[in-house]
Image 1: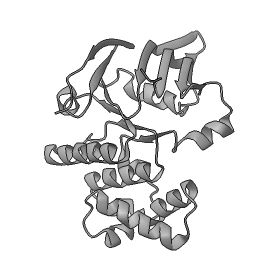
Image 2 (image 1 turned 90 degrees about the horizontal axis):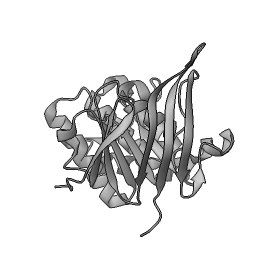
Image 3 (image 1 turned 180 degrees about the vertical axis):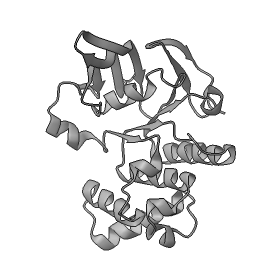
Length: 242
């Protein structure tokens, strides 16, 4: 069997205060293999998002993480801040829960996509613009030329989430962490976003960690499901994607 892409061992995440540390994630172990789709489910407040942020070392200043986080054999909790900054995106990238807030408010969709493409790939401006439009087309965004000229506040929540996915795909990640990508969307749009996530993963071959409080919503998309409860991974099931 091949080595896992991501291997998490004894991960604890919590918040420091004068009397010590309040652990929210209390010591979890799990693995994700290449091209695998894994769901991480649990109630709101169970620590799912905190766990996800720890994978990219993007925790709040008053938070702390312990344990080992191996990505292709390298412990990311031990690499320098500079190396970690370069690693984010092409190694692990993240779709954040509140897409409209995560997008730059005063830069157009096209500007944000083109900047990401030029940073991750040696593209001239014209080629980056064409690649940005192609990403928008792949994600079934109508009139991509007009959307590329739009600002985030001019788009719906579902459209902003598609733009977030386009930005993630522009990084060509090996692992995409999608934190509640359907939060706040109506059921029809939720299904569309999950369909696009699956199609994008199958087309590009990255691994996917899909975080949700709604197990029924995501289990058909994933190869297996992990449950986080009171800081522990208490359950693993393998429903198989439909």
